[in-house]
Length: 480
Image 1 (cartoon, rainbow, N blue to C red):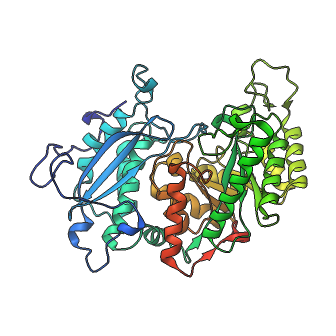
Image 2 (cartoon, one colour):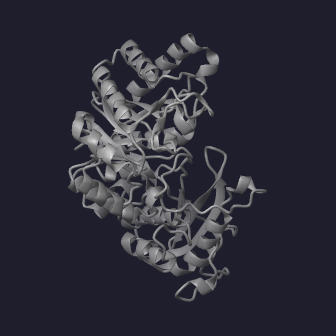
Image 3 (cartoon, one colour):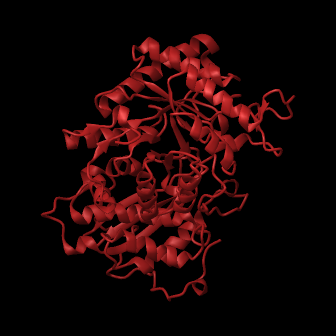
């Protein structure tokens, strides 16, 4: 629900337009700054550029056709910094709350007008005049106003939209690219280009086929640069399409939410074989490794087992496995295929199974639903030795500051950090700069297909070009 002024600890200023706070609908000259190329030089950065003049949110549509939040932040020099909030399909129960309107007669209940209202009427007046270079202060103010552990009053989608635009504005005010600003906020020593994890075969909640496991990814660790990695990924993707078409027919070449193919196969091993065939045919054997996102919470049964045929209900139970047997299946996959990373192999509350697998394999075990980019759950996972890598999703926690802290805590524990998109995306490319600025070493943002996915990969191309002599994480993606 939307907030009322009585719910807040301090009074708000008027949101009516004045000569000093123009609305976007008025004819005012703005410069939109949402990418690396938009940052002004230090010579033109002024005091006016440091201060918030106006904040305006609106409802837009994401890549799945659902509403999401977009936020414009205007600084005193007339620059406009725009950000859009992503949304997940398979979501962890411990994620910060994504505020939806719930009116089933409008967008099936998925509208975000209450989140938009919370920004325009309640957050925006609090932020006018504040210095955009102080990211931590901005995020702290919003968290204090919300006052809930999961951001359920304002909505994490409202808070994040503002936080992302503040970060962009902070970079503009300092006259540096966004990735450089993030590097300074996080005290990262060296900028590193990440290894892309291309989700080229979709299953789980992202596709209409029978595959239980959600993502089958290729990681070009043997590339010499990000641009070469993108080329390798694209070439394998197109070869894979040809293999799938020949084996399963043209219909099997339809793509899922994240651009990967969704062939109607039941056996997860068969999906891995398809990847191996495509990699070999492209000539990249040894240079491209495999990653998986199982998203096992999606097929946990009431009895605490895992149903690999969960999309067909009812079924005969032939594909229902106990956690121990599912762990054995992963070990078989690791033995038979060049798998270097498995994400969410068990349910988000099945801690003992996580710890057992983590202690018995030498690959990266990534926590997504388990951790939800939450520093408190990261501490628990470190203590229980449940995984060894964080999947960093900014909308799971809701602010840039908390996202950076989650990454720093994970790195301090010797973990890897994989920056990630969501299945519901927009043309916003913030996470590309985030992955470079944090030197995460790895990023997953879908297949080399669909513009909302390529927006991130193309931004990484621009960043690599601008930096020139910059290291690509490659084989060292877990600890760049």
